Image 1 (cartoon, rainbow, N blue to C red):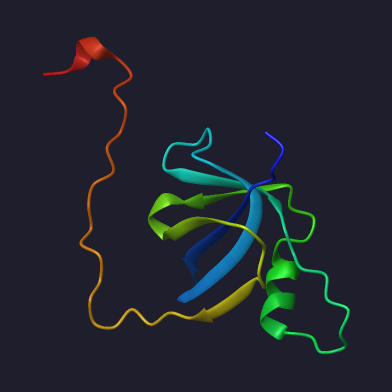
Image 2: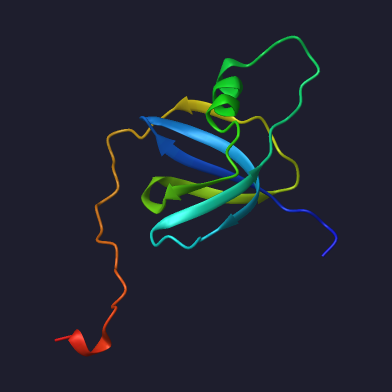
Length: 113
């Protein structure tokens, strides 16, 4: 496959929406987590620095791979080009997600009742 994939991942952390870009997103080996690796940050040649983008860069500096809790991920989009990583205010309104149980795998099939 000659084309490279870039994914935009939006997730909630600390009451804010974080938006990051990565080359690889999978369900990962940890149950209930999304695995994100090969982060993509835009290299800007201008003097103006976006504090939100700098905070995201600093947070993930030196991180090879991260696991995000599945319930914190808002969406994952495959995009053609990366954008600016940013942190924005969470505007969820007065509607929240109904808590749902996360199914757990059965380790011993004979133990079911």
